[in-house]
Length: 196
Image 1 (spheres, rainbow, N blue to C red):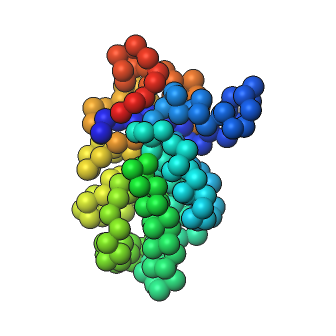
Image 2: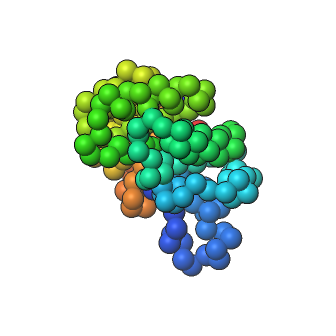
């Protein structure tokens, strides 16, 4: 897998097209999208399966982890995390990464226990964490990625500036024009269609 380039959400794009054609147009330009709506609520199974069915070959969805995760181990946290990650796994071959945004003031000992709980769920994936350098270091030690950092098992970049680093993973932008520009550069300036 090469570095996939896409947008953080695609709602509101291509208003000139009928709603049914907007995702198709997006998927002609990019091979991935990060879905911000998964931050607010865990999507229903039927919704996730519909996303998987409509995705062309090679296209993947990344999720934002629910904002109500505490990153402290508990029975409720375990159940919520398991449900969320199982929904993500329903995407099958269309499964991308998951971005976890760690809250400020999170205790490193609690987060370390939480990472152990995540491992016990035995639901591996491309998990990337963003937070303080100390917490990101713990995520790296556990075999995950840190958002915006070049070290780790894969890249998970949000609004990168300058040349994109070599490697595999994901790069997400909030603006269509910037994403298209980087997508073209990633392919040597020849096309914006991502088919990796």
